[in-house]
Length: 260
Length: 182
Length: 193
Image (tube, rainbow over all chains, first blue to last red; front, top):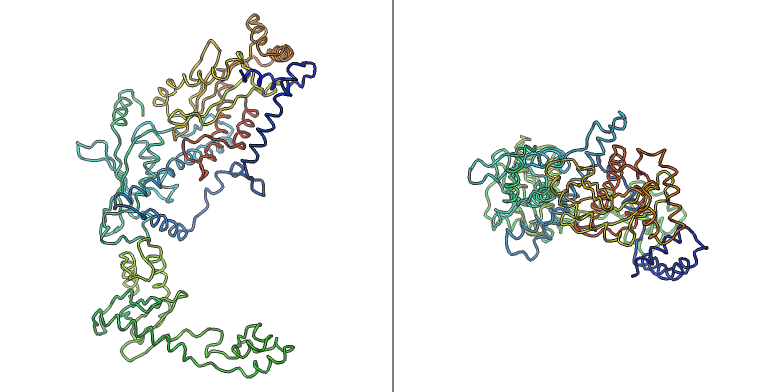
C-alpha cells in the first residue's frame, strides 16, 4: 500500500508539520525517491529553448494573418510527393500515402479552426462586455453543417478562399456521397502528372485533410480526389466524400429527433 | 512580333525541350534538333573560351605597388586578393569586353530571317529563343520563360533533372502567355 | 472544493490527469477528496462512468461546453464536460468540501485523511467562508457562477491543448507528458476554480 503513505507525506509537507513525527518520518523516507524522480525527469527531459519560450508561450493567433511563400510550399509539397512515391506499388498506393500525410493535418486544423473562431468571438464579446451573448461555434452534428464547415471556413483557412461547389450525389443508390469541387487546387498548381499516371491526382493530400476533419468530428468517411478537367479549368478536382453506414444511420436518428 | 520557337538545352548539351509557336522557320527532324542542340552547346563553349581577355596594363603595374592599389578605375574588376599578391595578379590582370561580367559565351546570333537569343541559367541550362529579327524586348520574353520554367518544371515532383521536359502545365502556360502577348 | 481533471481521447484512452483543490476563498490548491484512500481510482471510475451520458449528449447538443452533465451522489461528485471538435473529452470532477454542519460524516471523512491537524484546518476554513460564499464556486457546484468558472477553465485548457496538438511531435491519442502543459492546467485551475 504505497499510495496512502505518499498521500500522508504530501500532507505533512504542505503543513510543514514538525509536530507530526510519524508523518515527517514518512516524508523523510519519501524524500530520496522524490529526488530521483525529479532528477530523472530533468535528465530525460524537457529542453527549453534559450529564450525560455515553449510552444505554450506562443499565441495561436500569431500566424493567423501571416502569409506563406507559395514557392516554398510548392517545393515542400513536391518533395512530399517524391517522398510518397518511393517504393509504391501503384497509383492507388501513392494516393493512399498522400491521403495519410494529410489526415493528421485535418485533425489538427479542426481544433485550430475552432479555437480561432472561438477566440475571435470571445474577444469581441469581451469588448462589448457580454461574454454569454456570443456563443462559441457549434460542433457539427449533421452532415450538412459539416460540409459547410469544410467548404467554407476550412477552405478559407487553408487556401484563403471557399471551395467552388458543394453537391449531393443525385443517384438514389448512393445517398452517402457528397462532392466538393475545387476548380484549381493550390497543391496542383505547378504539378503536371505524366501521361502514364493520368489517373493520379496529388490533391489526394487535401482529400486526406478532409478525411481527418470528418473523422475528427465523428463522421467516419472515405474521401478521394478525382480529376474532372473542363475547358476553362484544366485542373478541376472533385473531392468525393463517402460517409460510412454508421454515420447515415445516426443521421436518420438525429433527423427524427430534430437535431440540426 | 513573332516568337518562332524555343529550345532548352541541359548542361550536358542534350535537348530537353523543343517547341514551335509560330511558323516561319523551316521544320527540322527530331534528330536534327538533337544535333542542333549538341552543336550549339559546343559552339557556345568555344565562344566562351575565345572571348578575348583585354589586358589591364595599369592594374599589372599597380600590382607591384600595393600602396596605390585602391585607385584602379571603377570599371576594372580586379579582386583585392589579386592586387595584393603578385602570383595571382598575373592571372587576373585582364578584363572581359563587358567589364564586371564573366564570359558566358554566345548570346545572340542574327540573320535577316531570324534572331537566336541564348540565355544561360546559373545551373548551366540554356534557353534558345528564335524570334523575328526586328522584335524588341526579348529579355522580357526570356525572363518570363525562365520564370515559367522555374515554376512549372522545377516545382513539378514528376520532373527529373536533366531529363526531357514533359510538363503539360508548362506547355499550357507558355502557350497562353505568348498568345496573350501577341 | 476538490477537483479531478481528465482528458480522454476519442477512443477513451486517458491522455492527462490532474487532481487539485480550490485556490479561491483561502484554499491552498491541494485536493482533499472525501475518501482519500479510494479517491485515486474512484475518481477515474466516476469520470469514466459518465462517458455514456457524454456520448448521448454529444449528438444532441452542438456546444463544445456541455456544462454539468452527471452527478454521483455517494461521493457527491459532479462532472462537467467539454468536447473538442476533434473528439477529445475534457472531464472535470468536482467535489464540494464537507461543511461542519453535516457533522458526523465530515468528522469521519477528515479523520481518514491521516492528520488531525489538516482536518481541523480544512473545516475551519470552510466554516469561516461558508457565509460569504454560499453561492460561490466552492459550495455550489451547479450554480451559474460555477458553470461559468468551469467554462473559463475549460477554454483555457483547450487553448493549451490546441497548442499541444499543433506540435509536430504529437500524434492524436498520445499521452500528454509535457510538464509545461501540466503547469498551465494548474495555473488555469488556480485562476478560475
